[in-house]
Structures are given as structure tokens and as C-alpha cells.
Length: 147
Ligand code: ZN
Figure (cartoon, rainbow, N blue to C red):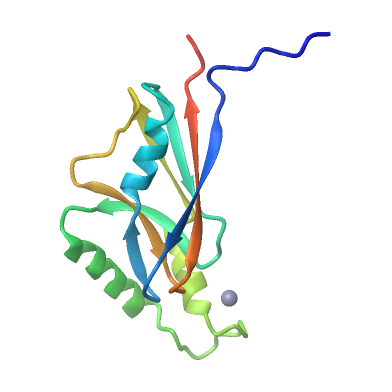
């Protein structure tokens, strides 16, 4: 039997290592993700952005005015205090886990003609909730199957 032909529309996963600098930080990663998508050429499909972490997440929000990311960070820290009566988790970062549960660990962006179909004001953010540290971001580009 001959080996199956290698698919020209195979998905693949790329890894980014993103260094954060604060305990709570929305770090824009749109450019890094767009560069990975662009390597696939002028494809249509979807792009999954995922973090394999329990104290960091992914969100899409306004990237034009940096004050928006600041205000989101501030609000998360106010909503979920670092110390709270009743926390049991011995690592002392229960707030980081709770914030991550609120944000989620992935986003999917549509891709058209090799470009992320983000709105004019949208950016993709790695949400650091227990930094600073280096985080892994997995980016999987899945082209549409041929019609
Ligand atoms: Zn923990």
C-alpha cells in the first residue's frame, strides 16, 4: 500500500512563548497570531488560540486604546480579591484560577484570505493572572476543506 498523499489543507499547531511582566496583565498577541496565520498563505478557515494553563486565559477586546485593557485588569482585581475568607487552595493564587475561569482559555477567530477577521477595534489578548512568567500560547490554523 502506498502512503496517503499529504493533505495540502492540513491543520497545524504553532507555539508562542509570551513573557508577561505583571501579576495581572492583558498582553496583546494579535501580531504574533496574525504572523502565524499569514504563513499558511491566502487561506480561508479558522484560527484557534489556546493557552494550556490554569491561571492565564485568552480574550478578544479593544486594542486601540490601552486604557481599556488597564480598566479590565483593574476590574478583575477588584472583583476577585487576592485574599478572601474561605479560599482553600494552598498555593495562594485562588484569585488567579477564578479570573481564568471567568475569561476562558481559548478564542476562535475566522480567517479569510489569510487574514484574521477581527473588527477594527479588536485585539487578541493573553490574560495573565499570576505573572510575571512565560506563557505558552498554542495557535492552530484550520483551513476549510476544499469545496
Ligand atoms: Zn494554584
